[in-house]
Amino acid sequence: MRQRMLGFFSGFPSHHFPFEIAEKLKSELAERESIVFVSAWPEDYERNDSDLEGMYEMFTEQGMDFRRHRVIDSRAEACEAAKEIREASCIFLMGGHPGLQLSMIQDMGLAEAVRESGGVVLGVSAGAINMALRSLDTKESPVPYEGLGLADITVKPHFEPGYEGVLSALMRISDELPICAMEDNSAIFVEEGGISFTGQIHWIERGAYSPFSPEKLKIPGKN
Image (cartoon, rainbow, N blue to C red):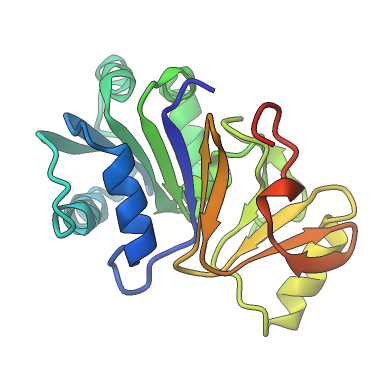
């Protein structure tokens, strides 16, 4: 694992980091030279510019200012984008459409830059989905696809236990692929020292549904 830390987020409906997540980020982002946000709506430039400032404000309101911040979408030059990703203190894979985000990353040749980064890599919603070795976008298909491979953690963001249809679909998929069903305001952090989490996360494996614990993730060197 090259990254200082990986952070898988479900979503933040209030547009603020919960206290536990903010404190974790502060401890891991003591050096804040640059933060690079990677869009999941590559062609929606107006939306990306607005989301950039909104998401960056989530950091600044916690006292985490960076010297530089930018968003990468289809406007970016591939070579420049790859260089900024490699040099970033933090890479933040944004929410939106997982397939569009991953396609842009692949088309621009950015996947290796993300994997080679020595910074903190965070993903929310679509971004968290795409960080996985085996990614799953249940809105599009029940069939997993190859993600960025940063960790073997397959997440279902925005999970609400009361939605029986969604749970039933995840139960079926879990016969072949364990799933971390994450409620909003939850997070999974992966570091060299191990795995930690906060918030409500559920573990679904082989049709069984139980509370999540880090020991259930079979990641070499992390347990």
